[in-house]
Image (cartoon, helix red, strand yellow):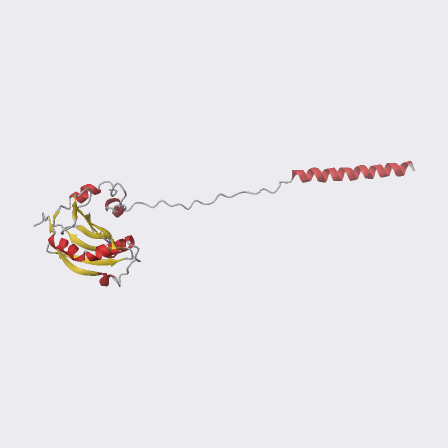
Length: 218
């Protein structure tokens, strides 16, 4: 009987040793590790092209303090020269200031409209881009290359070829002319209440007909 007890104890000790060995051997194994991979940074800094660094940008929209002029723009605009003109009867001839070569206003019982004359080097994006810029200002959808000829007509300003456009919006409209002149594009724009703008079309054309460009090339 004593031998059997001793034998059972031995088996018990052997079993305990095996369990202990399994426990400690399990602790030595490497535990699973999770890694959080950071998101890839896909922000790309594009280089500035020579055109973007040298070509003048269009001014930002007018604010309560006037139109914001970008650095270097004023000198470039000054180099375009000046114009002479005759203001239509009843129009308020405001002093030219900043990059505006002329600034006039007309008011009637239906509303008001403002005429501005600006000049910028180059073609400022081309005829289609400039027409669409004006269209956007009065809530019209962009025009296409195919429809552009229906929106413009030839016009002469100071004996030089220009393009005339008539853009009718719901609340506001624009009458405008674009004149390429000695490396610049001149913008003549009458914008305001639709009924006022359209009623003043004859006076706007009379203004264009009176314009004399300062021409240092001749």
